[in-house]
Length: 342
Image (cartoon, rainbow, N blue to C red):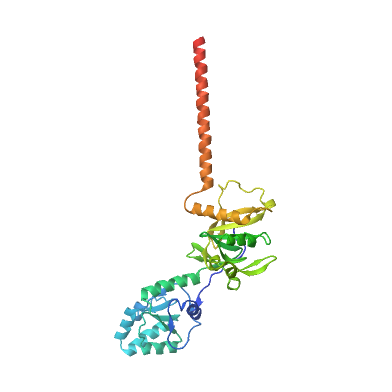
């Protein structure tokens, strides 16, 4: 199955957006005036411009954030000021997004002047260079990950991220509310945003406007965190299972045993999927909970339906062996009786 909504992936983010979103966690401090914030970071990784400072620019990764560690700063300080300016000016002419100096390095005034003239933002961080590179790369990978919006509610059921889909009015929010009352956590109600991290994992979250809130027909909009406590909400969760609620009359040919494994595709990533028929009197929250727990067992290598099928086949094979042995004994007895008569 494939969702109807379309996916989107950014072609880059601005330096200003990156600084506003990740500046605090990366301990980045702006040095000088906020210039060059409109420049685009076009690759989700970091570059250390060692060779470029030595004037080798053939394979210079100018689309990336340029990080100056102790080695780069020490090298710049060995150069005469005029040469230092020329080397750094050559980098700026490559349209780099910005420069970050790690370990709270003392930035030469000549570098700041050249940055100001080229309108390139300069930042400083106390983080060790390799730690900043790792953290910034993870942040960029998240920012550059393709995104997708699904119509459905998402719940964390004992570690199993479960997206509950279905037609309007089928009972998605009621099922989610029942799961929250059982101690599980709401991720998003009605609309869930997904990011494909490394094209392998789908991380679901709520749009900022509806975060921590639910809309229940007849009751209205409620604040889940205020009513049930902070343990009843999750800001981010990996998607492990998709459950589609469908009217009972539309599920007449549904697979009963559970041997057929269906999948639902989001951003080219296949996620285990099941369909649960909806009928008055059925406890949908309990059924979704059991489906999530069953999926958790499957992820650990145990498939209850496959185990039942194996036992059934073994039982049938054993009964067949018994029938064959019994028939063989009867035939042997018949031959013995015929031999005595003869």
